[in-house]
Length: 335
Image 1 (spheres, helix red, strand yellow):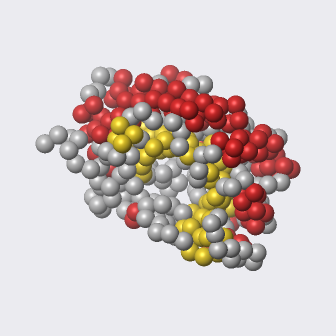
Image 2: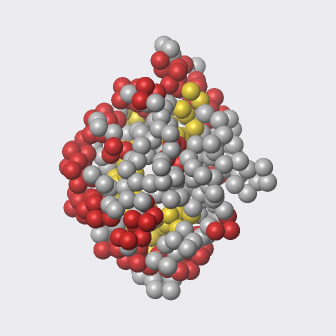
């Protein structure tokens, strides 16, 4: 029996079909909940996966059953060959046809490359935006780039890529007074807003559950101005979705901490330096980079991937007394 003959399943029966690839750990923002003002030490250039290496790993994972692929960072648009990356990955054949390729971005520089990305096969975009106030944006990100982000969102709207999603991290004392404003902003761009509970993935390890805005509170705030109706089957999706004022517009809440969806998780993560992670909060990684560069075969790569997934825990364990935050911040893991 070949290593490729069975689905990529863990010991809890979860079949893995979704691959997240971080293309770089670098970012052109310095969001306060992600990294310190001076940034964090960047990965050595020689340790960043080449495009050939990314494509090879993706092909192996496609043979193992991956059907969807999301490009993340840092900020993926900082990768000079981003269009070529999208073109090559979207040409990979999976179990259900060509891989579906999407991207999470802060939208800075998006207007310059959106047409080429669509032409290369990009299917969907998630754009990160935590505030609709230019002044607050500059304070939160430590960069005065709000207008650039809006320009990118407008370019995404005009591109016709749908669904177009905006992601907002909910933060107490930072943006918890503008949840409704964020929703109105998203609706004005024909975008679906996704609120995300703040998770313990900051570089400074200062996250506090007491300061987190839980999903239920987000929904209560939105319902002061909008009628929200539960919508659709969640499946493996992280977001609980609601119709806004009867639809067709929707809003989602990703309650990763207060209402974890680990039981349906189907994700595998690949860092920019070639480390495979079976969970966003994993404390261990599998070193595909070294295996690639020491002559490992596709079968060797597949076996390392299977071993990693076999060791996946039942859940992220944030509520466990012994929970330890991952050493890597979100910028180095990838979203």
